[in-house]
Image (cartoon, rainbow over all chains, first blue to last red; front, side, top):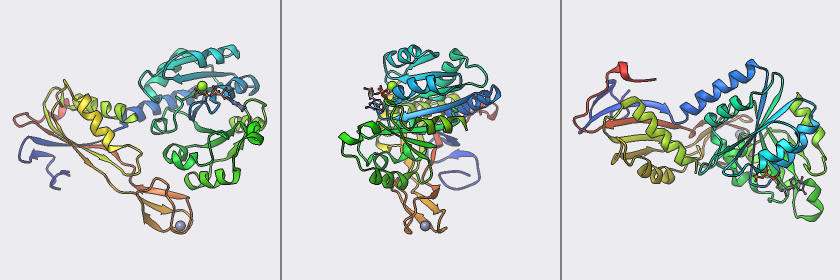
Length: 226
Length: 122
Ligand SMILES: Nc1nc2c(ncn2[C@@H]2O[C@H](COP(=O)(O)OP(=O)(O)OP(=O)(O)O)[C@@H](O)[C@H]2O)c(=O)[nH]1
Ligand SMILES: [Mg+2]
Ligand SMILES: [Zn+2]
């Protein structure tokens, strides 16, 4: 149907040039590629997780520990605007990592992930972690072909974060509350955090963890292995 | 600024379909719950169309409002607030409208002819 006048003609004049209905989703390309990535991963029985948080919530620290302790072969795609620091840290933990620099871009997309996966070439049965660019806004819109979305927030960020970034937080399949080793030193109201979180994400499991001390990580490994 | 890459995607999708035919108007649909900032899209649009067949095109944006259904009490309600709370207090809701992100239509410049359906790539 014509979007301008409601008639059934596909294309015609409206006081000027011809109007053509497209009805194309803005994210059509990304989503299409992401579904290829998902199929490809399923074909080699690899699971992928998209880790999203503000800058500095502890994604890389969590991964440094996870790749050593999970007990499954792991590899990592690191997304940052600049530098290879995080990929270097992961490699120092003994597993393969590919750094993707997004430059001016504020998020990873399916094109970047597909390319990085080709380079990483993960073995069958392994787990790939995709550390998104530290940003609680933009990554939420872009499907990367992952099997699960992990939202990480830390006790140094304030309890109201979920309500400030509802679009991304809503999409999380699991929420990790990191840096709980710092709870004695900061004003962080867990009950309030949970209330805020439940207003935008009513069901995702919430795990309280410390990537520094390892507290709570057994539940994280169990979730990854389920 | 995911609006920049989204807007670049719009221009690519349109030039892929229409080749170098000049475009006079682009109509997008950006739902109020989509998390995409229309003003940013407008700002980016003027930048990314420069030097393309869309240069000078008018950008129209339709912004459907949010509508959701509560999974607890089954009520349907309207809200443009990204924190979707049912009047009953539940946040367990299914979004029915407001997440749209679409290129609805384009208008060619006067004198440009409609591409043959066979060159329209889908
Ligand atoms: N006390 C404490 N510090 C932590 C914990 N996890 C991470 N940190 C510290 O927080 C800082 C940031 O950690 P990163 O792991 O680099 O954070 P990130 O999310 O990867 O950061 P970006 O990649 O820059 O977005 C570092 O100084 C870490 O040592 C934790 O559980 N407890
Ligand atoms: Mg990092
Ligand atoms: Zn309700």
